[in-house]
Amino acid sequence: MNLLFLIGFLEIEWVDILDILLVSLLIFNIYKLMQGTLAVRVSGGFLVLYFLYLLVQATEMELFTVILQQFMEVSVVVAVILFQQEIRKFLLILGKSTDLQESGFLGGIFHRKKTGLQSGFAISGILEAMKELGATNMGALMIISRNLSEMRGYLETGDELDAELSKRLLVSIFNKYSPLHDGAVIICEGRIQAARCILPVSENQKIPASMGLRHRAGIGMSEVTDTLILLVSEETGQLSVAQNGEIDHNLSLPEIRRKINAYLKRKN
Image (cartoon, rainbow, N blue to C red; front, side, top):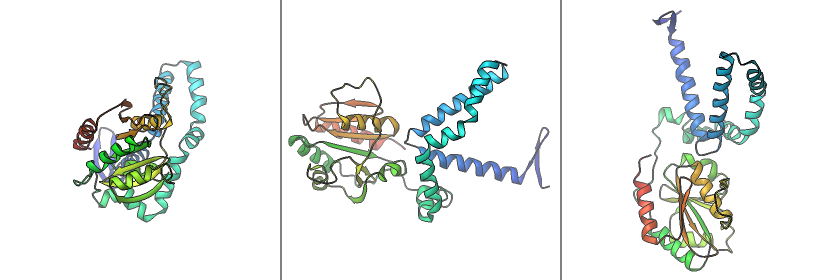
């Protein structure tokens, strides 16, 4: 036994330190994998129920304990059903050595991952595209993110482009005759990373019924990720921005520029 030190009656060995570090690394990377999805909130709900179960068990509330115990016995099956997409992504990452580096599962140990957007972010191209799209009543949904890893799950739902950001390309994508127009464009690191991406739709009952699916998806995305959502209404041509579950309508281009600059200047 390679004893390292004692904490009261606990004997701490080198293998215990290694065990703690590996478990911490596993939990951290599982969180990063689920970051930006509803799975984080669902996991929080599971933790609340578990701590509640420990509390009622300690206070000897027999009826409540039996009810929560029955739930805990099937919680593994429930977790597999609820987190099937996240589990699938986790297994895919484990199965691909290139993804191991890019996802940060092992790459976080040996490489410092680059985050944030590049300095050459073409805000003018976005604004000019929104102006033209609004003038011609072409609907658009654009996601600006400072964290590419947070967007990985959403990139996989669409067509990955990794293209230079420009007004012409954005207008072409959202042209109603384009096969890529139906869905969202994800912009990160100064480039158009993907188009035709599927976003989570907000379930907020306070959203007016007059808002279409595009705006609901934009608000839903802003609820679960740290992103800035740019929207162009197909019906009115109005420009809107959604962030943190809130949406501002009928904004001018200078107002949108200020919001983009403020978002990009924030620290990750």
